[in-house]
Length: 283
Image (cartoon, helix red, strand yellow):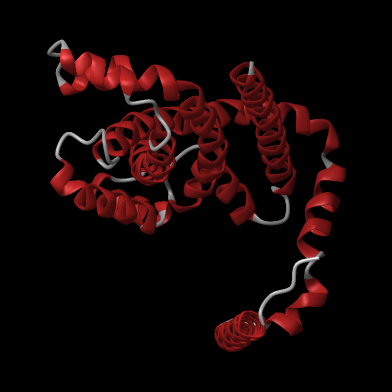
């Protein structure tokens, strides 16, 4: 059995105590911030959280009550709102594709050993930070003010945020690439774009595709949410159905069903594809 010298043991104990102290202080500060933030939000809320908590199931109950009366009409509503669902999926698909392409370029320009201009790597990283920091709904609202309502502002807003998010993930994947193919291509005079396309992309493509699929799931939800601010898609139809109130809740229920089934289907599909990619990559 190995014994530590007295000085080393006492120093280790002191470090452990200090780490616990700092951890406790951090947790305490976090708890205080959460409590104060909740109190501020509750004071600014119109009805108050605790007073409104008993009514949390009132809206679902009203939707079910209205839907039960018009249950036979729900299949027809599913057909009616299916084109709006396809618009939402198209927004998510295009924004994911554009975001993945731009994110790939940004990730390669911000990875040490691969960057075209190593001196300005921090510049491209800050660009990706900015893209991730601005919420999609803020970008969509600004674009709707300029371009008007419709799917285009939603697509641009989601693609902007997706570029920063995927660029960050892709750059982490790039850190683990084998540089020998890149160096070999450079030795025969290949340009930067050719080195990236032939030497890097084949190595990282499975991980890129996996992350892009995961982001596509997120973007389906985001495009539905942006519909509430007039960005088109099924979210816009859901907002209209809910705004009418009692008498239109059966339409809202049909939209909820479409959204739920779509998200579950894409979640299962992307999980299956990602698992296949991981298993093939392991072999």
